[in-house]
Image (cartoon, rainbow, N blue to C red):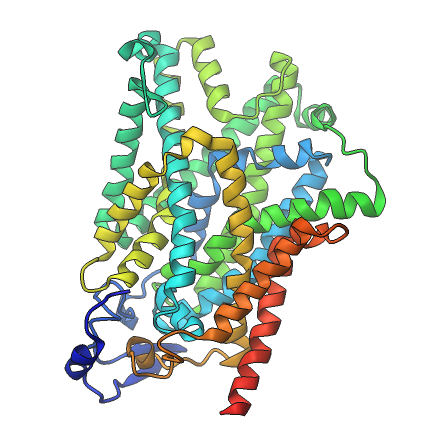
Length: 507
């Protein structure tokens, strides 16, 4: 999106093909890209020596992202829609197994070629058209970053207030843009910690996730043990979970289409955005086996386990307190008040902060940082892109309309299924996983299309989104909107493959 004179820059770019080599299924670029419009050190493909992440690192990355407050509360939306606890677990497992498929396919490109998501998108959308999906993805992530940072800051503030009530009275209850002084202090503190790890780069993120994963699993199991002990045993707790069900009033096919399908779609949409920019991480993997095994072990199992913990602990709160407490922040705050223990409050705050931090950095900052850097490669590095994304997360003020904002983001994530369909259609069905690595970094290369935009990709994406929106406005087609990710992805994938084959024949 740089407005520099293309003709002048083109004279600065060598026309000689950069060479590559392939070792063990990994492709490496032997010459640094020279076109300043399309590269900087953070966007350049990683060398084979830089690909140090193993299956353990990928698994811990997913554990760190999946163990968070929204995951804990995830089953609540399904149970309250009319599912039993085990139906909710089945929907969560199925949704995450489904989203694992595009996750692994897009991750393949990152591992094989060492490229981040915005560069990968150039193959299908064009060297300039890639800004459309990458910046659309970045906008969602910035919104989620603001929400998660707010949640993390509030968790810290409320837990401090449980032991020191005077903390919440600082500032006399006055608010600025919807937040009190204690909330702003904790928000700013938590924001700064997030930015610190982004500034330190990918290796610090790998270090954080590797340490956070076992700690968060341990915390979850301890919480589950507390629920089983106080609730009269795990069996009794789960048996009592039927009291959480709101009841949908539907059975058979209406239940399947009206309750289960939207539930599975929501589970797919939960990580649909990550299925787009997963190359941002897998570009550091040592092999395809490492990225595949790490993701298969880290994503579905962690999501089901932590959601199960959320259902079990909430069911136990019905027995213990006579009310269902879905929000873990509210629960630990209540426990801290009951015990008056500063140690418990500190441990609870630390656990909630680590859970939110490990999710926020990996899921909501890395992608936007690369996307913004890709839009202005000569002026914006990964670090600066991360700072801009973090600032946008604050500027959006998502806490002002939290409930509506989350609903909008989930819908928006579902619409991005149309982008995923194009990416997979291009990489798997059109190109058979073969990309011109050097060509991805040349304006005059094979991915120039028309003015840098692939109109077939844009048309297929628009068609996928259009089919989804039909389900919102046409009676009888509601299933298209309820299954937004599926209908959008399948439509765009099919149309894109047809258009590209027609384009090849025409050429």
